[in-house]
Length: 406
Image (cartoon, rainbow, N blue to C red; front, side):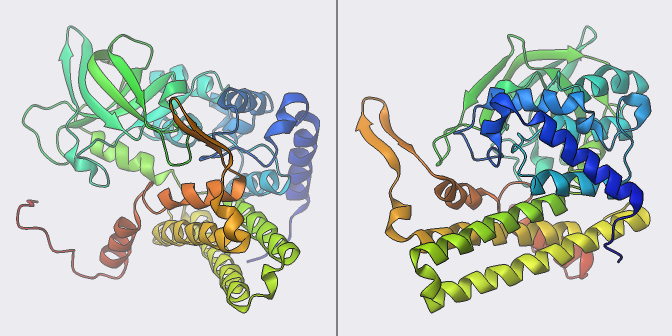
C-alpha cells in the first residue's frame, strides 16, 4: 500500500484543515478535544450546533452523492477527512445516526421519495435520528423483537418498548424495527419503520449511566403512529434492511478513531513520565503492550480499508476490528487508573445530599468507566467471536440451550 498523498489528496487535506481552522471559533473552541460518547460534561446542544456548522461546509455528506446534497467524496477522501479531523483535535462529535446509519440505509433501500424527504434534512443537520433496535428481550439477538406495528386507516400504529436508545431525548425521528405480521417469529414478519418522535404516543425515560449522564434511554410506544409509506425496503423486509444498516457502522472513520486512540496513549505516556510512574517496570510493560496493540489495530484497520477499496465489501476485518479496539480501549482505561494511582479513585466536587451523590469526573475517569460498555454495544465481544469463528473460520455453531429453538 502506498501511503503517500497524491496532489489532489494533499489539496483535499489542506481544504479540511483550513476549514476547521476558520470555523472552530467562539463557543466551539470549548469543544476541542472533548465530546464523543460518555462525555456528559459537554453541552449536547452545543454539539448539535457544531453538526449544523459542519453541514455548512458540506462535511456531513462527504460520502453521499452530489445529486442528493452530498460531496461525493471517494473512499480515500473520506478516510483522509476523518484522519485530518482528529489530527486537528477538532470538536468531538455526537453519534449522528442520521448521517452514519439512516442516511446510507435510505440510499441503499429507501424509495426515491424517502431519500428526497429525509437525506437533505440529515445532511443539513436539521433532523437528528436515533435507533430503535434493542428491547429488554432483544439485545444482541435482534430476531427476538416484540414491538408490534399494525396498519390501521393508512397509518402504522406502534406499541412496544425499545431500550438503549442513544440520544433519544434530542432526536426528531427514530428508525424502528417492529413486527408487522401477526404470529411471525424470529427474522420473519419484521418491518423497518420511520417514526416521528414528537407525538403523544412516544415516551422517553432516561437511563442514568455510571458516568452520571444519561446518553441512553428507554423509549415507549403507546399507539404511536407513522405514515404507511414510511416503511423502508417494503413490508416484511425489516431484517434485511436492519442488517444493511449495521453494515454501515464501521468504515471510513475507523482510521480517524485509531488516531484518536494514539493521542490518548501519547497523553497517558506523558502523564506517566510526569508523575514518576514511567519508572515502574510493570506499568511500563503494560504501556509497551498497549503501544504494540495499537499498531496491530492500525494495520487491521488498513487491511479493512484495503478490502473496501478493492470491492466495496468489508470482510472479517470488521468483526476483528470491533473486537480488538473495544478490548484495547477498555484496557487503556484500566491503565489510566494505574498511572493516576490513588488520585484516579477520587472524583472532584463530590457531595452527598438530597437527591443523591453528585460528582465530576475527569477525562481519564470517564474513559475508564465508559469504556466498560465498548465490549457490549455495537455487537458484544461474544457475538464478534461467534461471527469470526463460524463465518470466517468455519467452526461449528455455538450449541443452543435446551429451551432455545431455531
